[in-house]
Image 1 (cartoon, one colour):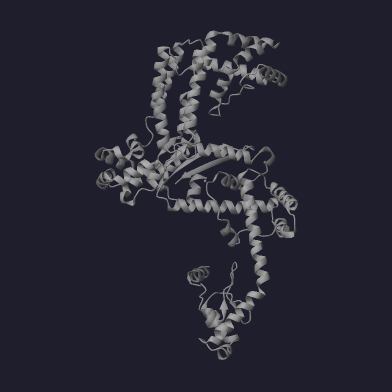
Image 2: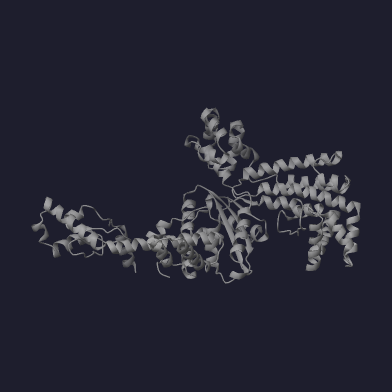
Length: 595
């Protein structure tokens, strides 16, 4: 066993590249196709191993008289080899043409599989895709010039099994590109979340910024010391003290920091209690009564709304899982409040009287109007926090800004002007209660307490956003705390040079924060390293949440037999920002040509 391994290492380490000089010396060429072997121009035989010894032995053993008839270095020998090469090219012209066309067909099928997967289409749609292409081309073809293209399309392998293999090849290429980039990165952050698909199979999504978890990192030899932050949704399975994912990873790499998704935290800050929660529950029962009591009742309500020419066509259902649904559902309800009251008066069902009595109460409407306004502001914040390209710097700024806005909302509510509570002023009669002011005060306190610590000092965040107004003495010690590998003395000197440079000031004003730091000169390596270290950190699990939406669009109730491996490949292709190297996949022969 050890002998075979040693021999394999020896063979792999030998240099076996074809040399152009062998054509004149031994009349050997290397054909230009996949896995080609050195071929003799005289007898058209191929040598199994591309080594000069093997080629020379073949030439001297089988064509020993060739050098006498055509002496080396003469014009006669050169002309003879040119003639042999031309004859070989002519005899293989048809074979080469057929092979390259086969490559083009494979490349086309890979691109078709990529497009279909990016659009969440099942594997079986690939054959339909081919039928559509053939039908369109046959209809558009006015002469026989398109016959070759139509024939190539018909030869394109796009069966469900072929599409599955193509998608696997594309997914492997994208994953290879990801792992290659990670292996070269100085550090990266990880966003992790877990959900279940339509068949109740648990699926974990892992994003890295520059998939299960500990095993994957070990499998691809990704060093734990490069992970600067792990972002989770705060579930016990993720942040549990003993068996949680973060705790298990910290046993291996104690330097890893963990962050509860900032978007999740902002939603938790606005949890209702007491009378406002009771009002919200009753409001939800009214909507469920109008929309869900029976299909006939819902249809009659929609007809009533259409006849009244209201600005909306229907009420919206609220779902706690959907971050924005509460604010939108409240806004729609207030816009259709008159139609809801008319419908409840017309309804003959017993529960309608209770719901109507609730909506006739002045305080109930005031509370609903207040909730509409405040959850409208929270929805705007939520939208500002969402996005694949958001950095922790962006989200901290938005959180700080909203905390200051809450102070403004408090003073606006106390003054009775209600500039930021339009619904409360117009539909709630401008009635401000102690419950409203108490909720706003509690909301502000929740934001201040939850977002006091972001695992990155605010001064460092401020430096990344505006590096020209930071003092070197205070900054360097905080930077050293954030990144222990930095040299504090060197950092102070770099910062002075950095802030004194007119080129830096011009570049900073002309580019976005990310582009500025990526293009920052290597002369300020310590400062650049710190800024990229901060910008690398994930602020939320938004990317994971959006990927689960893509997963559910892929594994629908009609595709419940989709295997986990196929789901992983399809999901990777759907959400990736990378493009596969299709030419490399084809030339390496990683995709079979046949079905």
